[in-house]
Image (cartoon, rainbow, N blue to C red; front, side):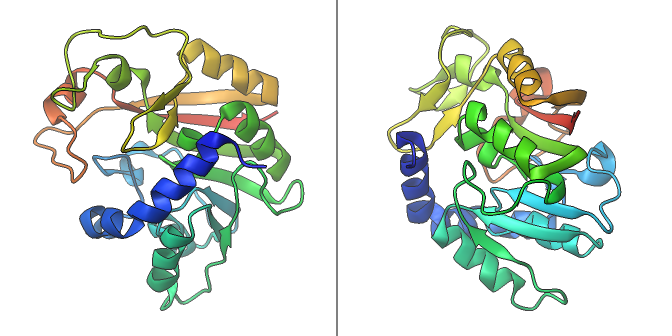
Length: 248
């Protein structure tokens, strides 16, 4: 059975998918293999490596812009999302693809694939942001082959603990405790899972992962984004990060 957070997020993404793609879709298509709200190119970050010939799962794909880009690089990609509305956008986007892109509607906590099916599981602000890592990390460990890799981006705690509701912005002042709160929910948004750095490390180890890298993304000079984030703030403090892990 889905958790309340999963149910809330599924409803949110089904309701918001059309507006989300209308606002952000063009930017995502222009830079499909790029990370975070600033669309920092994978060619610069280089966390995925050569994906040609790999079995890859995009773990919360939205309209599957990333999946289509990696399929074009020779990966065997499966794009998964729990939102049927987001997958409808993915189906339209992939209709003209040279190689058919499998689209799977399922919860990230109960993925309908056998154990050891993938070499790489990744997401860019995907399932690792919107599902409890205590559930998703063991599920990813099940899906990966030995030595397989998990790479994902998400929002750091700092925008949450400095957020000011009145201005809808991260600020330069700490306004909430860093500790004690794993689920962050706004009435008109998603339920996000926000762990401390120590909690992430403990969760990775408990699921059998080894940390290879942690990349703190910095907004480029003069950057703009369709997501309404403050580039000046994100040049001073890391608003997003990428974990790079492998299964021991």
